[in-house]
Image 1: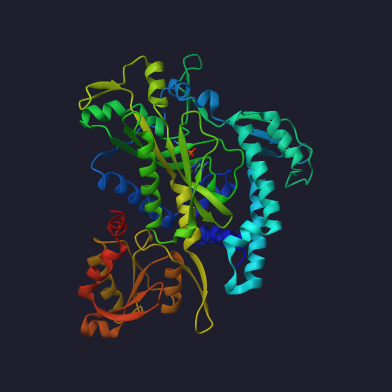
Image 2: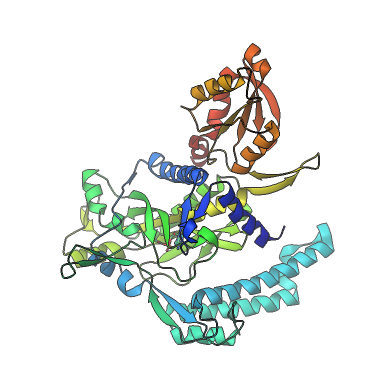
Length: 513
Ligand code: GAP
């Protein structure tokens, strides 16, 4: 199946099975805003729990907070977001559509990469098992020509972005002959800067109202609380503060479903370290975070690092963890060495001393910070894309199965009476009532057992048990596994111990320690 088709199917599947709905659906939606349905909220909560527990349970020097979305407006002046949180925009005069200039150029870079991959795929087909991909990529003239174009563009683009040279960004778009996907023309305006923060007013009277922003990242709530937490928690450097919460950005290019949203959720952790040790910690957190992703079992080839050439105003090192989405490798998480920029700025703008006194060195200093920042929604999308699978079975039938890691699945066990009579529903309810304290169970009695299995496959339920007439006599049920579809008879009394460990977040956490 072509990758674009996979993506379309994932989007449709999310709606059909109650994972994600467009916001304000009956009013035809609201651009780049989405709601999570009955299945989606469970999956999302499981992702959040996996992250939260990997941070605060597994590290005795990391604690969590939950700071408010509204913050003092000076915070955003201090952090640089009022002046520098901008995207370079360009309009096409014919279609009247607005684009991010950097995204248009990144897509052009991706096109060169796609051409290189196409050449490799053709050759792999031609040479079969004897194909040496590495050698081919290093020597094939067509691949090398595309690579040269890509590298030259990349270099020019990085220089323009670093200098925020808007004229040069426009010139790149012109030179690369990039066309508007709607009008197909190259009738571009100048490139302009556009601030991504949403603002509103706090207070009742027009005179006294204060302009406040909806936070574009959760990190600043951690920075301004760092000393409160350090003092009340008697934390010693190095230590971390974790937070999960909503963030808002007035994104111009709102595409690719929940990949780029205007209201989204972040899971961020700021790790406070001694000045000079930050790059060592940056390396450690890069590894730890990649291991967290890989423990989900989607295969190591699904991930790669992308080290930043253009660093944000606050960083001295930064990398993205990219995931292989159906539309290419895309950033899911950022790991940033943010220096002491944010804390120093808050010290300056607030006029308060926020230095840490280090009892080991007898020195006071503004700590350096390593940040790990992952979008819950992007993570959700990557999990859905990696899990979605269409299979043709041995009997010729097909099924859609979500091969979710069991620990993330919204429902862990479906309890299904074979028929709706003869005391089987009552027995099934009895089983549910025992097991519902240990994990999320789902009861269903409508339709044939085959149809019910398919529905459970489609929402990624790792286990189903069927209660039949024999159950009433011997206390055994049929346990069916989602991926293998294997069925075996097990005692009701054994169900909890068979299932619990496989579906718990702990099973993932153990892979990390
Ligand atoms: N505090 C640092 C920070 O916010 P970022 O790279 O801008 O860094 C971190 O964002 C993560 O937040 C991204 O890797 C992505 O997963 C998520 N994210 C950012 N913008 C998003 C958007 N518009 N929609 C969904 N997720 C987004």
